[in-house]
Image 1 (tube, rainbow, N blue to C red):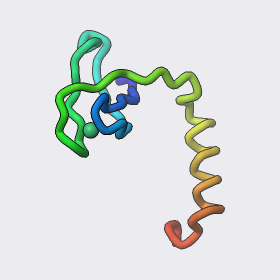
Image 2 (image 1 turned 90 degrees about the vertical axis):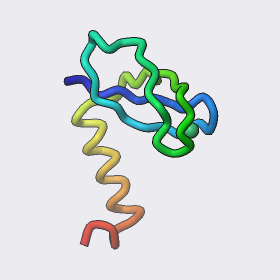
Image 3 (image 1 turned 30 degrees about the horizontal axis):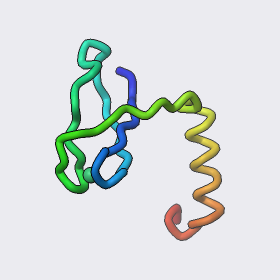
Image 4 (image 1 turned 120 degrees about the horizontal axis):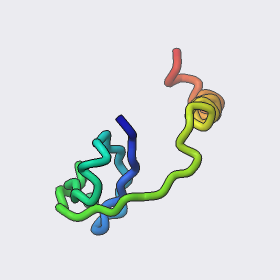
Length: 67
Ligand SMILES: [Zn+2]
């Protein structure tokens, strides 16, 4: 199932949602402020390689988190 980034139109909080293509266009409520409106963010770099890169960066910035 694809993973999509949604951005809350109210507080700009970004959250990830797994959903089917058939659920395209559904509004997901923001987990932070509860607003019922969100818009899909296009994330062309959402790949395993990109995730691993971000992981590596975070390990450098916050090594204590990975002990
Ligand atoms: Zn929000």
